[in-house]
Length: 415
Image 1 (cartoon, one colour):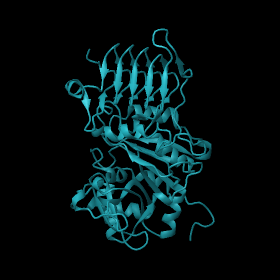
Image 2 (cartoon, rainbow, N blue to C red; image 1 turned 60 degrees about the horizontal axis):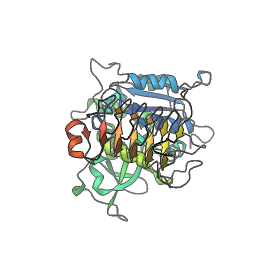
Image 3 (cartoon, one colour; image 1 turned 90 degrees about the vertical axis):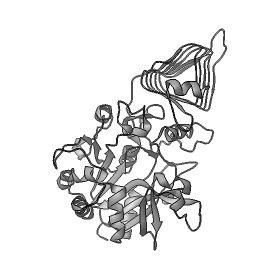
């Protein structure tokens, strides 16, 4: 093994250029990786924290659509020590290969091959920017080196009826990938031998041997028929060469993790985004934010502590199974199974159930909201209800397939 005596040199690339249409209206004026999550985090903080905790601190973030708030967040939050040669930097579409935007995730890598040439790493991590999870990337890289593959794909079991949402992996001998299908229909997808109702899905996290990746990108660029996509094109190409391996996510062990250790969720839709928040607030949360040995890092803001108060007419506040961020104020209100972001204010007699309230949301006295996602600075007037009459809500707001009512930034509430 060539790397027994030292850790190999690694460059990490996060793909953050997707348009995020399925998360609208939360992505109307921000990139999907910049969407707030879990109180005071943003989606990009999760892959960045995994890489930083693992010791991989040379990270480039490839951006494209509506990237201003993402760029600001990265510049304010993710400042590494230049003395040690560490960095997190955003790289916009530079059109180095001609006057065009990125044609897909593989083209984004191809157009930025200069970053790889400059850094000259032994291996390249390519991670997605919009998944909620913890992973120790050291263990994934060790697997990749041990199996000698050109690319290793992180895999997790998901229900077979969700196969049209993922890249589906069929195993060969050992950890070799025999076939890789990008989002096949569930009725045409074979389940696992030991679990017929499940499939092995790609998590969108890859490790490439650098020389293999460079050659592959040039080959894909010259292909007559290609979607310029990592999952749709590069991985099947590597499978056909017999150089693709899968890393079983359930084998990963993150320090300090308690409870359910192998949580991963793609939050590409409003319903999955909402459900991931509900996974945070239970007595035994499916995803536990409170792991000091593997923290999720984000921007620290100067805000006062949260305040819970009572009210003369409505009595004490009643808070259950909820996350309350700094600067939030709850006065004589009921809050359950909800996430309150910084600077949220809940007025007297209001009721907030199974909801996600982003920064600066105000809920007026006696208002009631249930099953909603309210983007920044939405104001719900006193006595108004949201989430109780979906037919009415569909006439005025976005309502997801799962019945989640969503309001965009500062969107007026119909009285």
